[in-house]
Length: 327
Image (tube, rainbow, N blue to C red; front, side):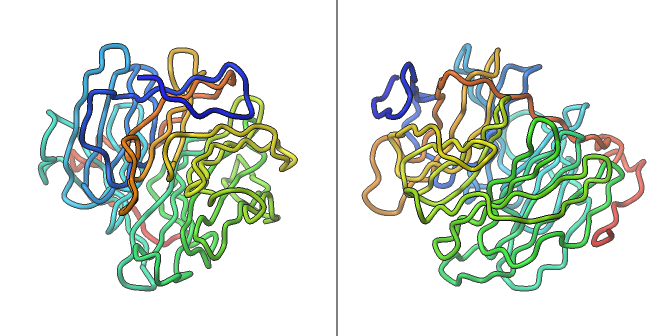
């Protein structure tokens, strides 16, 4: 199902991933391509669901979790690392349906400084550490209680590495692992920052403004970095994908058929497809809002690095419990 609405780039195509799916997602988020399966995974946060589609044949699977899943990764064994409402969990995915408690093990949890908090945006760096941030789920409160955390291959959850975030988003890492990107998509903030990134230690420093989205349509939601170092952000409430050069200059703009694109990730056989999830607004939603799209934009991305730790042993009860809150 092709849809129209492209500007700024020639030769771009936009297709709905599941054109026959009638039910939209309330909050589609965290797309992740698994090359060994040629499959795309993503979540619907309030539905507590993980979805999987193989674009080649359209097969769709879904799992329902005990609590909301906001972002995730996989380890080498295919065990899921899920950032949820109450912490980070190792999950063994079996047959589609309800995830049993026997396949669900909490690894670590931050100390939430406010009520009603959960994890939000996250992904692995190129060395396999999992980074994820927290937020107060009720965005109308505009609480800056959110923080960014790092979960390393030894199962240690860091102390907060960035504080004062309202709606943490936009994590990404440059191809050379020298820069980390982070955004706050709340309407009162709307900024993207860059950090110097120490790949060996997983340390960040020299926080600086990368993009002030008050100059552009929308708010900087989830993001992806392409093979040339371009930073793609979903302009939530702006119906756009925006690409910024490593110097922070806007050089591409793609208009989408949804009002609230939420996160993007490169995938496909040659990593030349940008998969985009979206959120369905409470009012004035159109037929495409809340669906997932495949955008072929003439740019290549890079594979997502799996989590470098081993989670299967945790579920088997053979690994020590992860430490929460250590540096």
